[in-house]
Length: 112
Length: 113
Image (cartoon, rainbow over all chains, first blue to last red; front, side, top):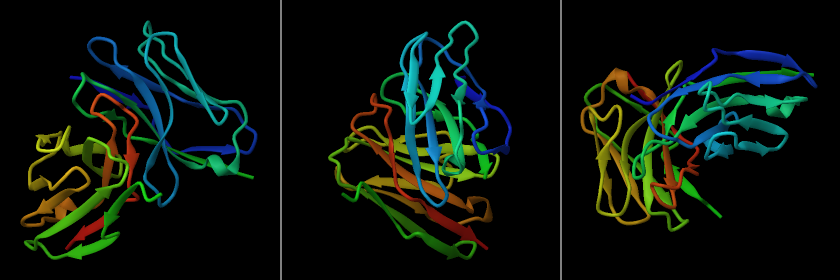
């Protein structure tokens, strides 16, 4: 079945470091791909999305490119801030009318 | 602008007790969802309602029931709580089931002793 695999956390970085969180997927057809972020004590919120191969989603300095050949959607940011500390979830859509499938989440901790 | 509102925020139950988690959205969304979040497991779908009047099982429906009371409200019921149901529960909504931008509530932390 369809699934999402994320790198294990936690990821611990210093402020202004480069961030990569790996995400790979298994799916039939051509799913849409997403990154959601969960700040402490809150629900998830959509960070960015890409709907077809080679699309790049971007928001708040974060980017991810839909790579069909490697079935990947890695999240990157050039210079992280303390305020980026959160849990990041990769997700994909299945066929229309069903709900998203989420990865297990990766905790990012950024220190000053 | 409230978005998705869940009640209660915290709850402690004894094994075998029942309770209902409430969820309401004010965005006129058609689709609503219940997820549970467990350490190391990420989010797993319990039930969802693609539109008013329909409900479908997700990945982990056992031990739960749902009611789509109207377009705004989607409740989750635990008939006989078990320690394995200790989790954080999130309600979410989206304009349509094909629209993958979900709006989440702030969660209910449930402990079953």
